[in-house]
Amino acid sequence: MTPHRRQLYARLSASFLGNSTAVLGAAVTLFVILAATLGAALMPYGPDHSDFLDILSSPSWAHPFGTDSFGRDVLTRVLYGARVSLAVSAAGIAIAATVGTALGMTAAYEGGYADVVLMRFADLLFAFPAFVLALFLMVVMGFGATNVSLAIALSYFPIFARLARNMTLLLREEPFVQAARLMAEPTPRILVREILPNIAAPLIVQATIGIAFGIVIEAGLSFLGVGVQPPTPSLGVIMADGREYFQRAPWVLTMTGVAISCALLGLNLFGDGLRDLMDPRLRQRAGQ
Amino acid sequence: MAGALIVYTVMHAAPGDPALAVLGENARPEAVAAFRYKHHLDEPFAAQFWIWLSGILRGDFGLSLTIAGGIPISQLIAARLPITAFIGLYAVLIAVAISLTMGTVAALRRGRAADTIATSVAVLGISMPDFWLSYMLVFAFALGWRLFPAYGFVSPIDSPLGALYSGFLPALAIAAPMAAVFARMLRTSLLEASSREYVAAARSFGFSAPFVFRHYIFRNALIPYVTVIGLQIRYLLGGVVVIERIFGIQGLGSLMVDAAFARDYPTVLACTVVFLTVVLLVNVVVDLICVALDPRRST
Image (tube, rainbow over all chains, first blue to last red):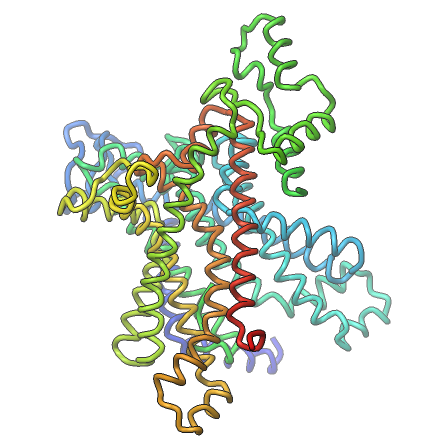
């Protein structure tokens, strides 16, 4: 690491720690990720461990989130479900980010016909209500976890494509890009080595918000029964389960929703904070 | 139009033969052939698309396959679209009412307790999935206090008041997260507008603070606010799909979900196209409102 770099990172981390929104968001997000990855292993029960003598019992020390109709510990299932939901959402957003960024950058850099066609296509997908598009795709592709990821990817990639395109357009004629072009660097290399590092930050912010979006889509689809299929526990599947006996045991649905809200809150705060950090003019600004 | 082509192509590429889906795997070949003929399934792709598209332009989406066998989809949609439109408009009105209050209070009391509370509530609102929120509302207002019905919806055509009453919880569930987004946007744009030079100029003329706020700040801040409302229509319609299902509202969203379960491809397709059209129409209306609001364009 060059001294210059080190200085830059020092400054960045100082301003990060100065932004309470970002720190709080990062803390909550980190907690959610830790809970989803390690937390499940710490629980004394398995996600499918059922105890028929202890069904639909309300929250207690032994079962902080209560138990469901099979006597399964809801907290354990929420932790496993969070892992599934996070993975499904993150995979979808990773695809969306990769494909969207590649297409957007290429469109902006090459310009002309490719640009027009690609961006009209992205505009078009963008006009669909996201959830309706995802539901439509689930019908076409069939229900299941992998297809939920694909549906998330398809409904979110236009956002990355637009963002990447707009930022690449700004950089395309910058001296350092022109220099690389004069040195006859191949286009993919220019895009990846010269332009991508300069537009990565806003893309990362978008990805953070995108994962929150993906979690909501997954939960909604699975809640309706067209997403992740039981017995795989995802947050949406657990909630769909909980709605069956909502009147008798409201804690199953309630606690799962609290867990989702917690994850979304962390991601949203983190995304907001990062956005403020990157653009000092936008400090105090929010909005979607 | 291009949207119609894309969804149609994707739908066409879906695995499985609709004829077998409807008639069962063991259908007699003659029955399958007759079914395929009736639904134009034996034509080439381009011809099928043309028949479908020209039908849509005449308001004809073809016949539903499985959920309401043989009934024209356009009839199903015509019966359900007003209900969804009612719930959607109701939700937007609630969201606008909440966000105008919250956003304005937050901007006027910037940095004080009211602002902190409004901003925190807004972040919380964004982080709650609307379908979960609707159960919490049912839990509190329908099962707990018994103020509103937990399930069921009176069509606005039968009883407008009954629809307002029975639609309140679903509309509120859809509205709350949107209100949070709107309020954040309004607060930001109010703060931004109030730091403009023309506002300082208006103040220096000695205009009273409420006058400056109404005529110089608020009106300009409304343009981004209305734009965001337009953008959020996409999420609103997404929310409607799940919420209708939860409250047993017989709208377009629950039609689409029912069709999705029954693998009624033409109906799912028709619903998708109708939703897309609604978004595009709303965007046109939003653009017109923005033009009307822009003081530079009014004389």
